[in-house]
Image (tube, rainbow, N blue to C red; front, top):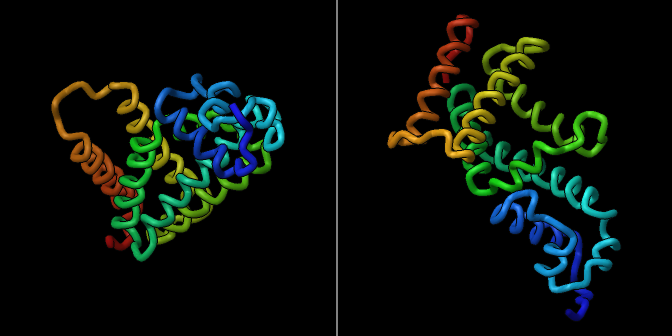
Length: 194
């Protein structure tokens, strides 16, 4: 393998995404990444520090991509419509990028500044959408957690083959989100539907 000078961090992240999406997080090694990029493994150390370094970078990248998908889905929408579109965007992201989605869950959490920053941006987006329901402070956080729990549970069960019955999964997701929204409207009756 001849080293290529054109390798940059974006190319590395793209190659790493392709590996984890095709074969799972455990398939991402320095050797597999170097082979995919057609470079020598030591060249990767110019961009990150070892396997834990690329996994962290990939976690942040995955969270950024998820945030982008959620933001795009919410633009020009509010209330129920925004929630429905964000739910579809979240699940579709996990479907399109199963390995990248999984690696976002391996992020170092609040103690890592980069992970915390992107995670907070996602929370801020969801709580901003929840303002249409006049939810603020702790109520907004509780409902953001409920929304994420529903979406993560659905996406994870789907990825692991947990939905074996021959019933349309998109319809199931739609009904689940409708039930979540009905709960919001029942719990907070003064909110307007949109």
